[in-house]
Image 1 (cartoon, rainbow, N blue to C red):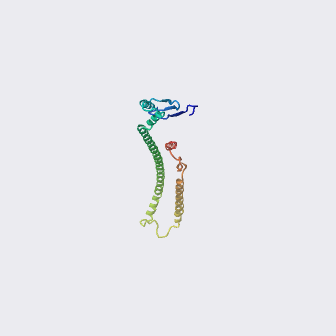
Image 2: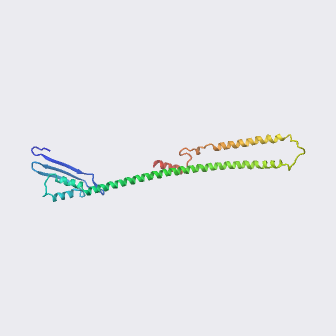
Amino acid sequence: MLDGNDPHLQIICGKHDMRKQDKTRGWQLVLSYSFKRRQVTAFVKGTPTSIISDSIDDLENRANEASHPLLFPVIILSHLISMKTELDQRESRTLIRRLEQAISVSFITAEIAQDDSKLNLKIAGDQRQLSNDSKSDSKAMKALSLLGATFLPGTFLASIFSMTFFDFQEGSSLSPKIWIYFAFTIPLTVLVVLGWFLWEHNRKQPKESDLPTFGIGRTATELTILSELRQA
C-alpha cells in the first residue's frame, strides 16, 4: 500500500473455524511493514489453545537471528503445516470416515429391519388367508359328508332289497308304478346337486373383507404396524 512517500506492506490473515474438543482455536493476524522506516507493526489475537502462543514463543527465540518482516507469518505457516497438525487432520478424517460408515451401516440395518417387518406382515396375512381358506374347505367337506350321510341309508337299503335274497312279488313282471321312483328321485337329485353348486359358488365369491387390496381385511394390529412402517 502506497501512503505518500512511505509505502507499506500489509498482511491480514486468520483462521476462525478451528475447533478441538468443543473449544475454538481461531486466531487473526494484521501486519504492516514500512519500507521507509523498516519497521513492522503487528496486531495478533487468538485463543489460549491456538497456535499463536507457540508462534510468539518461537518469534522471541529467533528475534536476534533474523528480522525479516515476513518472519512471524512464516512461523505461523510452519505451525499450520507441521507434522503434528497433519496427523491431527488425518486422525480427524479417519474419525469422519468411521462415523460415515457407522451411519451407513445403521441406515442399511434399519432398512433391512423395515423390509423384514413388511415381509413378516405379508406372511402373517397370507397365513391368515390360508387359514380362512382351510375353514371354507372344511365347511365344504362337512356339507359333502352331510349329503353322503343323508343319501347313504336309502342307497344302502335299495341295494339290499334289490338283491335276489328278497323276492317281494311273484313272476318277473315289472311294476307299472316304477315311474314314481324315477319321478321323485331324478328331480330331487337334480335339486339337491343344483342347490349344492349354488351354495359352493356363493361361498367362493370374494367377500369385501377378503379382498387382497392393501389395508383391507387386515386386523387392527396389522394396520397399526403398516402405519408405523409408512412413517419410518
